[in-house]
Structure formats: structure tokens, C-alpha cells
Length: 245
Ligand code: GRF
Image 1 (cartoon, rainbow, N blue to C red):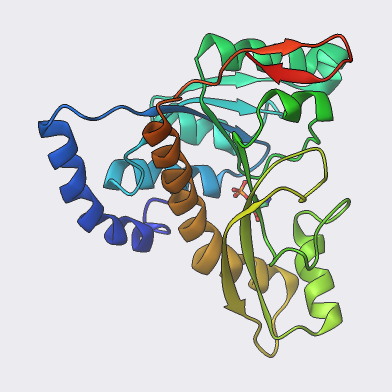
Image 2 (image 1 turned 45 degrees about the vertical axis):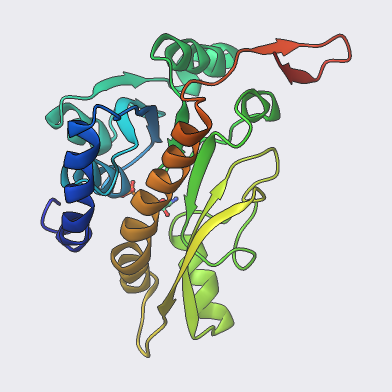
């Protein structure tokens, strides 16, 4: 996998020079990042590689939470020396999100990245972290997105419709599935003879593994600039909505 994302790694060489400068001047504040996964974790690997190569320099991945105990992504995290946790809805029931919030607060997480995370987060959870949760979607939103559009289904529908261009989108997560503000998009050509699997792979290689690390760095840098690397605690108001204090 390290080889698979080596293109992203090469692009990071220029950024690496800037890291050294920041480190030398002692101005290297970073956002603590949690990545939420459910499967193979190729996007997680792209993030780990991007951190190593210096593409991500304003943030540090310190926690990986999986919604499945058998996700290969957990092995990738362990190999990189990152703390892992498993939060399975079927095991934890209604306390599943509470446990995630406990872990996120314990690790003082400032940015949450959904990288192939297949569990839907409640509005209560997403309101906890306004513009602090990123998601990667394997299509150009607003096409082929929303409820039910995940995994191969997205590419099957793109091929069925006959689009000639698809791609990937990184966006903030709010209570509307795939509905938060767009951060980055990258287009990918659909080619004659594509199967959903072939198209999925091309979208990952050409778009997802490039724009996810780039977006994480962009948002982390903005958070560092604002001086709010850890989220401000949220209080429950009388009307039931959440307010920042
Ligand atoms: C990716 O296609 C991503 O866009 C989607 O789920 C897939 C995850 O793959 N949300 P991986 O677990 O990162 O390999």
C-alpha cells in the first residue's frame, strides 16, 4: 500500500522542506486527528503516508476507531503505531456514539476524518463537532450521493447513468448525508469497458488518495491558524440544541 500511494508521497517532498522550517522555528502546533474506518483502510494508509511525507504537517493522526473488529484498517493503524479502538454498534448498542465521544475527548481530538466509515452518525453526534468532521465520497457531489450511495453502488450508478466524468469529493459532515460544505473535488475520466471495480480503483488512485490528505492538511492548517486545535466543549441548551461555550 505504501507503494500504491507513492504518487501522493512524491508530491509531499516540497511540503517536507516547509516542515523542517516550521520545526526549526518551533512553530509546529498540530491538530490531533482521529480517523474512523470500517474496511480495508486504503484512505487511512494514504493519510498515514501523507503524514510521513510531510503533505500533512498541521495535524497528527493519534486515534483510529473502527466500526468493525475485523477491519484491515486496524492493522494498518497498528503498523504505524497509532492507538486503535473498536466501537461496534451491535456490541455497544445505544452507547456506541457515547463511547466514541468519550475516546475522542480522551484523546483531545480536534479533527475527525471519516475514511470509508460505513456507520451513519446521528445528528446529535455531528452537531457535537460542527465543521470538524470530514468525509470522502467517491463521486462528484451532488451526483451519486446521499442515503444508500456508498461503496461499489456509487460506481455502478455512475456507469448505469453513462456519465463520462466522475471523481471524488471531500466535504464537512453535518446531519444531511453527504450534505455538508464541500472542501475539495477532483474529476476522474470514465473509460469504455469500465466495470464498477475498475472505476472504483481509478477514482481511489487518481482522486481519493490525493484530495483526502490535501483536505486534511488544508482544514488542519486553518484550525491551527485560528488557534482552536481542540474543539471547544459543547453544552446542551434548554431548547435541546448544542451551543459552543
Ligand atoms: C472509498 O471508496 C471511500 O470513498 C468510501 O469507501 C471506500 C473506503 O475504502 N467512502 P478504504 O477502506 O479507504 O480502502
